[in-house]
Length: 312
Image 1 (cartoon, rainbow, N blue to C red):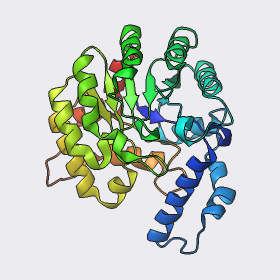
Image 2: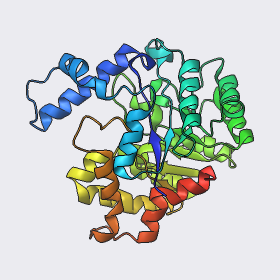
Image 3: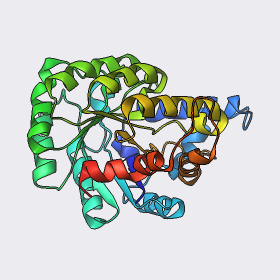
């Protein structure tokens, strides 16, 4: 079973305009750097390309999964409006809609609750999502403007532990106007120590802070990670990606690394979900200066670990 542990379903009204502006600027810069479209402008991307992102019923994601051979995807709502300006569609409605999509496709989707812990209703939304809507985890994104280890958020983590659901958080760099400093892996150290029964998934292998995250996962057996968002490195700099993945598996252990794509973030590039899955799947056939990979390790990453964590 192949499980994508990190995907999003987006619609234009689900994030503030400034978020889409930042994403479009990043995309334009990447295209210019690669020499694909030297004169591409942010407004052109927003007008002509962003339609590929909007997927309010999950149908595009299902087609993407079928093409890649992915059995199950975990849907993560994105709450980034607390500081940046509220989304036209409320975070309550987003969570409810995503839960409904998951419930209509129970064999393919699992929904998490996504909420900024600074919201007064965060605790109530988590409990409602899990107990009434069937959600099976909590997603937070510190780059929206908060340090996750603020003690004010401990009741939310305590509730997640009581409900026996994992907490997945962005870790590492972020595209402006989001701010990377809040998601440095060290900020999860206190949470992991104070809630040893809580499964914490630090997403994206910590991006540029991957070594720091490795030190954290080595010490805390309740901290996990996923490899979402590494498509550019995996396709263009395979030895570097192999080096990071090898060290992550060595220090974290093959039972706590999950496969993830961060879809639809790469839908407008040549780095398709299918291609990224194949890169990971083929690691045992590749020779790496940092050490080779076993079929057992990759089977755990591609689905075995998520299947165990989520009780699938």
